[in-house]
Length: 62
Image (tube, rainbow, N blue to C red; front, side):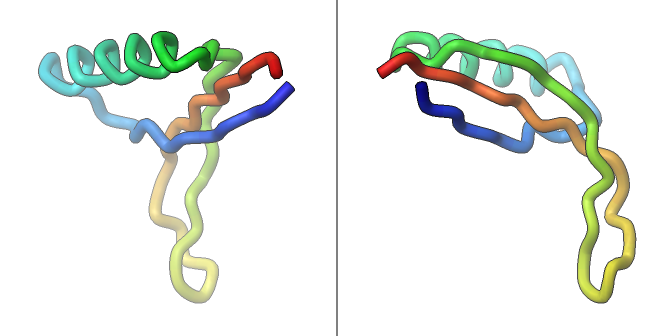
C-alpha cells in the first residue's frame, strides 16, 4: 500500500470547496482513496507558527 499526503488549506470559500471536490475526484480516478483528513500547526522560518492547515491522506493499494 502507498500513501500520499497533501496540504488542502484551512479556509474554504464556496469556490475552494468546489475545487477540492474536483481534486478528490481526480485523485480517485487515479486510483487514490481518501483515507483521512487532520489539522496540523504549520511552522515557518525559525519555528514561527504559520497557523493551522489541514492535510489530506490518500492511500492506494499496489
